[in-house]
Image 1 (tube, rainbow, N blue to C red):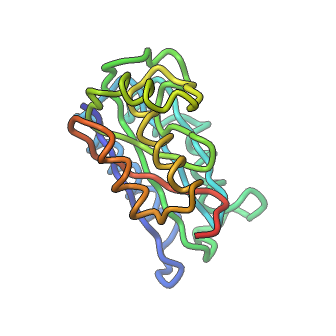
Image 2 (image 1 turned 60 degrees about the horizontal axis):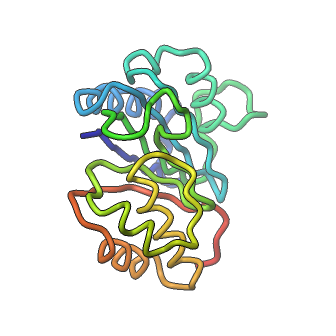
Image 3 (image 1 turned 180 degrees about the horizontal axis):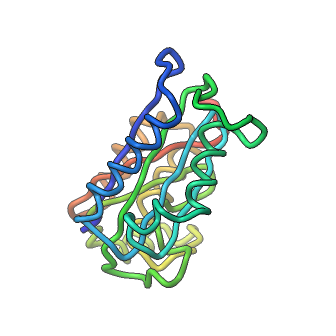
Length: 191
């Protein structure tokens, strides 16, 4: 199975960049015991989602220069001077450490967070009826080789049909079978 984690930073809480970075990296390291084939992170600031993922274990990823640049820019903004203060938009961060069960981790798009239109998400578990759900929703376009994709395609489908996030999740979980926990975020949307 995989490891997933999340953190929400409120604009009212004036935590420093270093505190946020240390927290995210600690959560990554703690999640690594659940999967070490690949790791990834998505950050929602305002209505923009940024994703960074790589086929390497989290303890290696967090020492990677590109990851550290990504995290700095995602939390501080590309044009901000390197300060220790976060800008004051709320930030939502979700992370994933993967134990490969289907779809090669060497295929970048199979690693999480998965991007399905305006829905970005992470998944721990297994969808045992994924093929049957894909067959039932034959109009869906499959882009990845992982069972997780059907979850986020279904959520996106119901949101596009003007369901609430709550009802979209309920309908999605009524379609799938297996053990599943998820975290997801949404890009530009009017809910």
